[in-house]
Amino acid sequence: MGDPVPNFRSGVSVVPDGAIGGAARWADDGYVAWKAPGNMRAQRGTLSFFWRPREPLGVAPFVIFRAGFADHSSWDMAFLRIDWNGHGFDAFVTDANLSRIRVSWTIPQTPAADAWKHIAFAWDETKGVRLFVDGREVACKDQVADLDSGLDQFGLAGRVLSPHQVQSRYHFMRGSDLDEIRVYDRMLAAADIAALADKRDPAPAPLADTAARRTAWLHRYGWDAGAPPRARCPRHHGAQGRVRRRQGFEGVDVEGRRRHIRDDLARRL
Image (cartoon, rainbow, N blue to C red; front, side, top):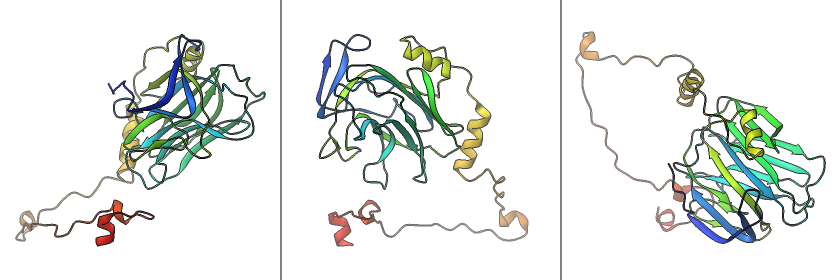
């Protein structure tokens, strides 16, 4: 189990008129984040919550929820994000090759500022992604991907949520209200999402698809094209074997050599 106590919190309070009891009121310049290890997996999962705009919605897009990588080359380190896109909702996850598996949906009628909407986003590297609104699947993309990665934090932050900073600044300031934030370690079935939208618990977890997960594991390490060659010992094949020690002689700060990075070690090298 992960840490239930927020890692960062500013400008977020609790109001009594939530979808179920109290709700989190996220100020425009506020943020709250929880540590991802033990709470969220990159390979597969489901994120579910009730969301209220609080202010009238317009055509300007803004971030509703995000999760960040533990280490990455993108400036905002976004692994997962759910947005209001100006006419509905966008959601994506980012694979190991920086490709984003994204779905987008146009809502028939813009929600009222005081209306609660249930949003759920499910992903699985052996299947793809699914977006649900009010218990109904509105968008999906079937795409096998390599999603295995380390995650750092997840939560509410308008501009960036990463190991080096968590903030809502500049043009990324648009708060809202959230309630019943839930994270599952699997892609929930459509019936389970409908139960969450109806304020009920999902059914017990079914047996995992071990064959699909094994296939994903083989692909992750490049072993899905065939078994790796067996190691051959020269001593056992008529030749005299020899063992050599390989030793490193220089250490390089890889982070310091990334594009746009400036630190002391990078300047000295």
